[in-house]
Image (cartoon, rainbow, N blue to C red; front, side):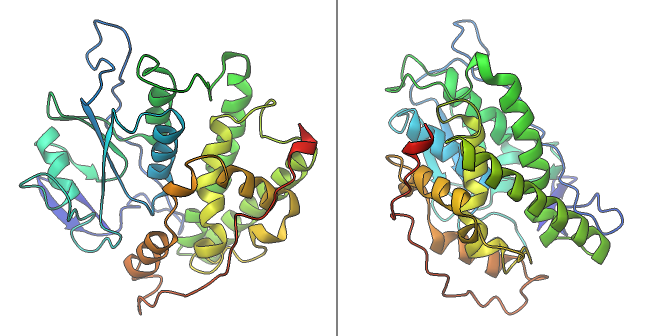
Length: 313
């Protein structure tokens, strides 16, 4: 893990804001937006933008899913970083000439940049800069700003449900999406137990909610479902063991596990999931947690099983 300081890569934990053993995630720094407005600084154009992602990272995974759901594969290219992240951060075997590490792309965008180097990165090839490295904002751009290029009219952030989506997102982010990291990277027993308790309280809340309704908000899939999905799909394979989130597996929750299978079976979504990449990254990159870098062979999982969620429509 590391970050940029004074134009140089520093090999240290990126959760530099630790307090009382708690994991503190730093905010994203590039926060511009693509817009369909003709006079926009970053207008929605085919072939202009490129995503840098890790198949292991749940935040980057969101953007791959929205690129797929909105049919934007031919309009927005993708580069996948290598699965193992070591002393130089994210590495790129398949990248533009002169770019071997992701931090070099950050410095190309801003020679004075200091801080964490994260995925996803939404890159503007025309101006040679980073538009955004904030996944929650990138997926909203993909959802709404490329309508003239998209082959899907689905709206995953509908106006009528935005307040509820935001409320659900907030709890899921704090206690589940980031909650597994708060547990896994905690350096005190108290910090770990706090994160652990909040995580499983929220999973119980979701199990109850999804026992009564098919999706998190409203009657169709929304952004909230996909933001949750990328954590759930990694949970049993990585977070249960590697991050000590072992009270229950997602497989032990009937409603949650059926819901997870339904989302996985949406056309194109399975193509965005690579368990080899996911497990290799977590178990071989986090040496303070897994110093031997041995990668487990299990668990057995079959997301093609029937989900029977239609009855909740």
